[in-house]
Image 1 (spheres, rainbow, N blue to C red):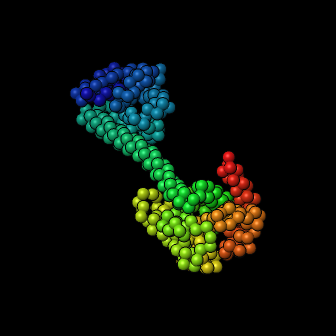
Image 2 (image 1 turned 30 degrees about the horizontal axis):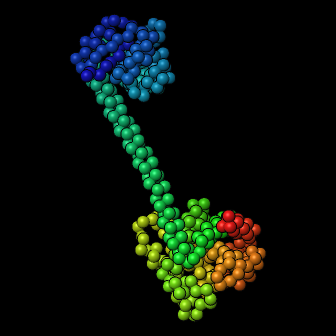
Image 3 (image 1 turned 90 degrees about the horizontal axis):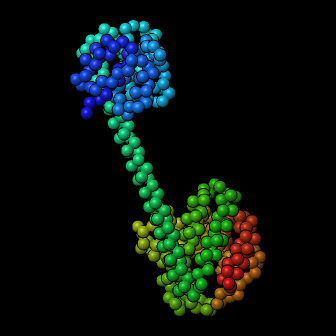
Length: 367
């Protein structure tokens, strides 16, 4: 199928001459003034490949046609060659500013007319093919991005599910109801959000807090490897038994490393930090590595306070529950090990929220 050319000129002679020159390679459409040209452009704008336009015409001149084409954004995909017998640089400059691609001067030289028309049509055809390719690539990229978003969401859900399942396995083996994990997650979130507000230099964000809170479920996953006679012993542990119990931090990391590749690196990073270091203490007297100060990952420091608070306010087979104000004061006073002064500062601001969450979870458990 040939490309269509619209020849717009009020002189029939000019229209016929251009038609004779171009008819071998193109289908020729003709308009005798600007009004007729606009009507044909409206009806056939997706079929017309180029417009040969005279400037001096009755009813609506060439400048009027150019203005209308520009207003309707037709010049972006339909090039215009102006038919003119003048050599005025002012008129040419004005036409170029309006979006004209080139000029055809009278009297017509057939070979030049054919070359100019062919060059412009080929240029716009190539331009359109590039735009189509870009549009297709953009569409493909958007579809791929959407697919990646869906996959990321599913991966995140899988990560959270893995974490929750592992945490629940530990809780049930430890003869707990599973509420301990829920409470620790809640306490960690409250403390982390306050700490983020108080100490922005630590770089916590809503995203990192979400991962820390989720990963806190795995703080005791290593207890899977602790023998029942030690894990479930109702009385005080011997020194040898306590050393075995302390190994749950390292054994938990072995469990986490064994499922490498199943979850995101960030989730595994926080889970590993929390699992290994939630029993470290700020003065270096914790375990398993004796880390001191901010060498202890902030994720583990936050979960450590949450875990200790829950242990104090919960009744266990070997102890009664402490009153919540007393438990908070014991942590602040360093009776449960030394914690970061900055974290204790934030903790002191949220003890009421801790107590409210503990009561809420207790009431739900009773119900």
